[in-house]
Image (cartoon, rainbow, N blue to C red; front, side):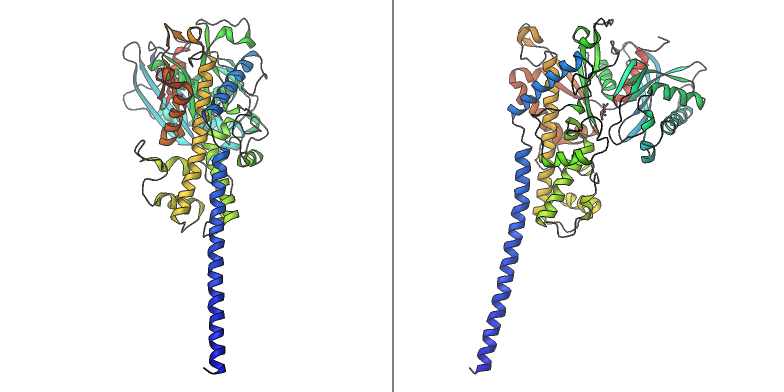
Length: 514
Ligand code: BGC
């Protein structure tokens, strides 16, 4: 081999070595980045961990805060709002009642026909439509004129056998799912907006009066007979169907709970008398906070950037860890950090930097066809997670996501969901503990002849109803906290449209014509 040949061979060897070295280094880098992504998920898992011991601490903290909120206004993060509802529907209600349900992503108008004892709800008709985004941040007049006109159209469109409204005034149930300080059953002032609504001039106003005025203006002869929170509507329908129902929980865009409390336990209203000796209390538990809540750096960042941030739950409260409005954004934040630190998405993941772009879409919808309990993969039934890939492409514009990355995305969703559902379970047991139905205090606290009392809690909301794993994790956690002896006596019942139908039922209970 001549000098030229030798030079050529050496050159080739050098190039080959360089290529091999580059390939090795690229693969080492890729593996390192993948390791980073996996480490981030592991870190998240540890930070979101909710062993039963921690859940029990949350239960105790919830019960303590409930006591404090009932003792004085402002005494706790839990507002424990009075509702003035001392009687829940029992099946004797009769007649046709209307209801409006405003509070989440959709707005509903309902008509419910009640048959009185024995026949119960004869029929109900619901019309639902999304609230235009601009009305969520406009003026109160615009919002109330809009809902009053939808109601008027609904009433006028009735031609399916129901009579048109008679000349006399009709009583209406109004579900308004925001914190309201009630002045009576049919009036109350808005304390603050939540869930992305922000209509400044409405804060401090009597919400029922706003609607009454809007209805009068457009010539609709109706009056708010019951102004209720969605939890209260849900409890009303739950109790109508099963008289052992003592509490209601909403887990949807927002989250909250209400329950039946003895009036003598509502210290802040000493001397308050009710016919039944009890009153429904709207906890506004979205604002609950305890140092026992597992809080991550993503939650802290979410606090700093979320809407309504100067109001309640400045520090991550229950709502931000549990409800559909926020879960998607926690997932987005984790994925964004993964994309930044580990480069796992092949496409530039620019959309991941947009707050609230995920909302509940990714989390809520993908499990629709998931057969209950058949697998832990709640996002997608297909073995290659095609649906996850489709969501990432459609909503985040990230295409060509490898299977192992899709699996990681599913894991992130699972961690965030599991924490949410287990914390909601702790909240429910907290309520049971406060009312002596958790079995911890023996006979004095809810046991009859050694047995715990049958207790029904109705649960409503898209996250609980539409999301199989959420429900499963929540039920599991209730069982873990309560233990085998008490858990069988606590029934969680799913409610649908309870918030609206319940408002119509309460309008019937508190109707001036009754
Ligand atoms: C509101 C509650 C409501 C809950 C569920 C929260 O954001 O503050 O009043 O019950 O959402 O809709």
